[in-house]
Length: 181
Image (tube, helix red, strand yellow):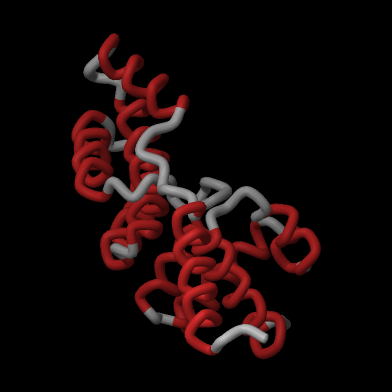
């Protein structure tokens, strides 16, 4: 029979071994190296700055990500740049900044880009504005009926980050039960 003190020692050793095996967050990726090279070759490449800002966001390198997003927007005032910045700010937890960028992107595209409404859903979810999130979800479904079915929503969002998926799925559930016509 194992002595109680030894049981605690075994537990502590197991926990420390598990912690030692825990994955360390990545600091770089091959994609980041490619983007660094693109920027080195052309310091005016807004798309490369935008993409690198998003990658840095996913790597948790927040200040670097924000700097790249600002640089991208200073180089290009196109709707897709503002939308991409919105997604990065959303994943940084900067929901007010995400809404600002999503709203500007939608305004600049005259709400014609396929992503305008569902991007706004994410931003409004982040700021807690459920009414606007639901209104924009309805508009997103009208633009892309696949978003009106949970099965196709799952397929459509398969490569989204967990936070992005959580937001859109939570809004879908409320929309499907209380909003869907």
